[in-house]
Amino acid sequence: MPVIWSNAHLPADAAAELAAGVAPHRLLLSPTPSGSLATGQADPQLAEATIAFGQPDVRQVMELPNLKWIQLTTAGYARYDRPDVRQALQNRGASMTNASTVFAEPCAQHALAFMFAQSRQLPRAVANQLSARAWPQTEIRHASRLLRNQTVLMLGLGAIARRLIELLAPLKLNVIAVRRSPRGQEKIPVYPNSDLPRLLPQADHIVNILPSTPETDRLFNAEKFAILKPTAVFYNIGRGTTVDQTALAAALTANRLAAAYLDVTDPEPLPPEHPLWLAPNCHITPHTAGGHAEEFLDTVRHFLANLKRFESGQSLQDQIMP
Image 1 (tube, rainbow, N blue to C red):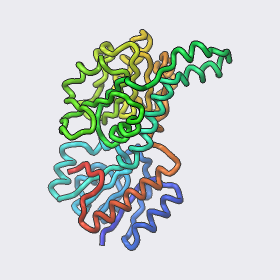
Image 2 (cartoon, rainbow, N blue to C red):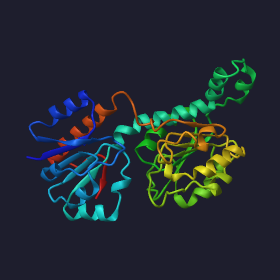
Image 3 (tube, rainbow, N blue to C red):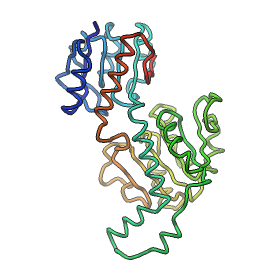
Image 4 (tube, rainbow, N blue to C red):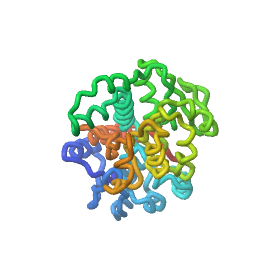
């Protein structure tokens, strides 16, 4: 019978559902719970486990022969995305899954909220309420836009992007995407990453949902911001490391970009003195796109559903390795 280890930092209701849901399996709880975005500490108990749920120590993931399946509590997995980790898992026939399905819906809704806020000029109205309390009706009405017929360029086509595409469908936008290897079966036009310089000047909305990898590090730099329309809007709900934030602040200050909406930054938390806080038309949420009231319960239920698959020998949902 599998032994399950967890260092997931869960509220009481989610912890109770986890304990009840894994029964009759033995559940080992780490004495040092880890938040979803934090690196987990090594725990000797993990050596007894067949399954890990949470954010286990990377070295233990590689070295423990009994560990057959690791379910992460995040969509991101950059710290594990290494050749040595992949090789170690492959050598012993182990699997790693993430929680991208859990976070696809809230992140997609967050991105859509960003787009609506910009098109309907909500930040401008809020700023007026917090300052002059004037009545700029004419100016805001004339600056507002409808999303129909505008071009949205998705960077990446994972679970979040696919759900956002579904949410955008009724709005009659032109939605395109780039990805490393187009498969030819996507529901929208998809191009290889090498086409990005050609596509960026066409886009009204650039939605960055890229993970943190050596290839994506500072991918969005001064050169790319320079070829955007001055009316374009940039959104980042992927990872802060994918953007040269100095170049972004400069583009906003020089009015080479209409606005930026960021849910992720580098570093996090973003220091109070960082220029992005005061950059014109830069709107920041503190990495909250994936959050919602039932986030932890959904994460536990996602794991429990995958546990049933594991027990019956079915393929696991959201498998990322090997």
